[in-house]
Amino acid sequence: MTRLEFLKNLGLSGASLFAVLATCTVQSCSSKGSDDPTPTPPPTGTTGVTGTTTGNNIDFTVDLANSANASLASTGGSLIFGDVIVVRNTATTFVALSKACTHQGTTVVFRPAQNNFLCNNHGSVFNLNGSVANGPAASPLKVFNTAVNGNNLRVTA
Ligand code: FES
Image (cartoon, rainbow, N blue to C red; front, side, top):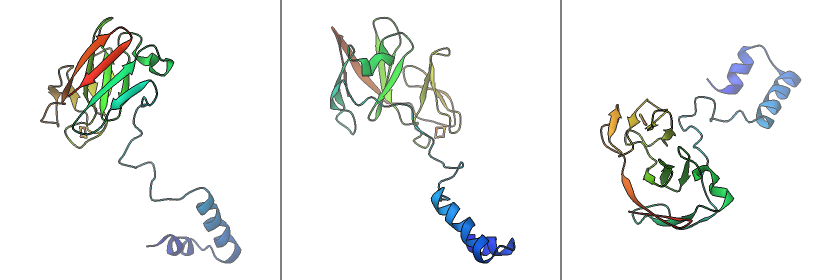
């Protein structure tokens, strides 16, 4: 049943039908609703970073002194750069993993209290080393190399 047929079945016609349709158009009765299968991803770092953050040749440097990267200033903080989620897991160390859940690709989120990554889509959990702690994901997240030099954090494949 189309939207128009549905509204006609409600008994709407003429001016009232036009008003409903116009409101629907203005307020975006689009095909993307609350059941959108693609949840809003976490904030993504776009400034204070240089290099390649997507694809198979990951190699980028994060300026930890840049205010845009303040999320990484304290232990437990995380930020996403392209395909990679970076976590400050201790005062002096970082981990960087593929942000895409290996089940169906949803962006994972870091949980400081549990010290692991959760995929909100179907509940998969990944350890800091990328291994699967809880399915349905069956494969680990890809882990990238991290190296700190002063205020620069370099992440490489
Ligand atoms: S997409 Fe992550 S658990 Fe299904």
